[in-house]
Image (tube, rainbow, N blue to C red):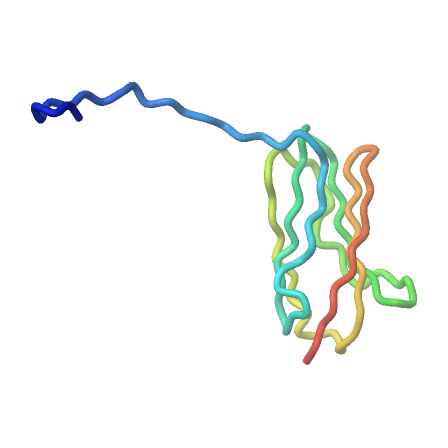
Amino acid sequence: MDNDGTFEYSNVVEVELAPTTFTLDQNYPNPFNPTTIIRFSLPTSSVVTLNVYNTLGEKVVTLLNGQMESGYHQVSFDAANLPSGLYLYEIKAGEFSSIKKMILMK
């Protein structure tokens, strides 16, 4: 805006922020009861597997297993039918693999 009250708008600029690396974020909230959100990012389209394990290494549930587009993603995990305790979640996407801990407190 100028001092004389005239104004002019600039052209609209669109920006797309795409992830540049594979990441697996810490779930939120943690500790949780009974649901939590798991977020991850994919820089390229990939076959993604997201599993949850108990502390004995037994697979509790598979949250994702399939092709996903690049970008930022999130999955809701409902553990209402599981006992309180420590759980591990693992993502595999192409050559990327990562594991994080989460705590279910009822």
